[in-house]
Image 1: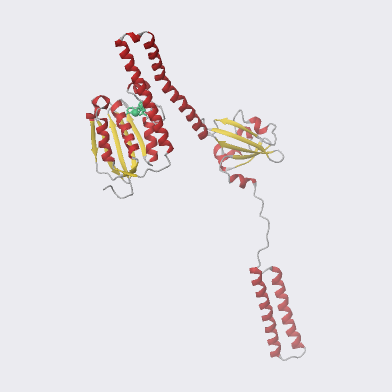
Image 2 (image 1 turned 30 degrees about the vertical axis):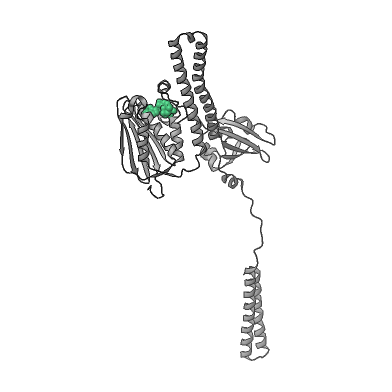
Length: 402
Ligand SMILES: Nc1ncnc2c1ncn2[C@@H]1O[C@H](COP(=O)(O)OP(=O)(O)OP(=O)(O)O)[C@@H](O)[C@H]1O
Ligand SMILES: [Mg+2]
């Protein structure tokens, strides 16, 4: 019930009682007066109740929403945003305070965003369209930002920091990849060309020399072929990364098959391969890719382990995953190289890798296969002792293999 109708009800009740008293003073029967007073009051209360019920069903009068404050607006944005007034920071959202420090509000904006390239766009003259400046090293040394400054009203400006670190890293990876791939192809190509020219000019007459040169040329073409095959394979795996594999694969059978296939490679290292395969449930996977993964990891252990030392391949259940572990006894890998091993073309010792016909793409292919299978890859190594590569792959929830 509103205040207005409440007062009206009281006045009406007063009038009803006053009427009854007047009736009494004018000599009416006391019973009749009481009946009149009660009836009058009841009528007033019924009318008041009706009014309040009506009031309930009536829609609330519309009031325009309060305009949102600048602080509330910028707090709703995910990236760092500040509003400056002249040279001061007028307000900053949570992301900006986390990046630049909680104390930046009211500070000089050139101190808040301490970067030689930032001062001019922050407090210098600015046109309607605003400006974008690239800043490196705010937050951490590697972080890259686009600082977008737009004029608001009066002396106020909106400053937005857009994180470009990931984009930059992706772009750099693309450029590096093209450069590395070209370099890897150019080296054997230059060698092929050199030998072909020599053969045509002089060495072609000498059968022994010709044979040796042709042998080298054949090796170089094989290296190029392998590199191109691996590049195609890598791009195929990457392209299919978001499509989950759907075959049901028994890893123990696959490990035995791979052992058979690599037995004669790496100078007969196949006899050093020891399998310890516990009974494991089948996994959901892509058979060809899992075979490729095994070839790469087991191939590395055979190539980089010391000749004659055992290479152990283990398979065991691990909760709702299957754990595959390949351990060799070799020179190992220094810790600083471990995080970069799965980058394309990354080799610890490029000369050594090339001498065993390596392209530096093997572990990068392994990583992409593991990612497509929603698995995990871990590489642990102790220099002078050896390396263990562990792959965890999720168990298939489908019916077991018949
Ligand atoms: N088991 C291992 N022991 C020691 N070093 C290893 C081992 N596995 C990999 N590495 C190092 O990691 C590098 C990258 O391995 P990766 O398999 O990606 O490439 P690669 O073996 O050189 O070439 P590819 O596998 O394409 O033929 C290798 O060059 C080698 O230096
Ligand atoms: Mg390899």
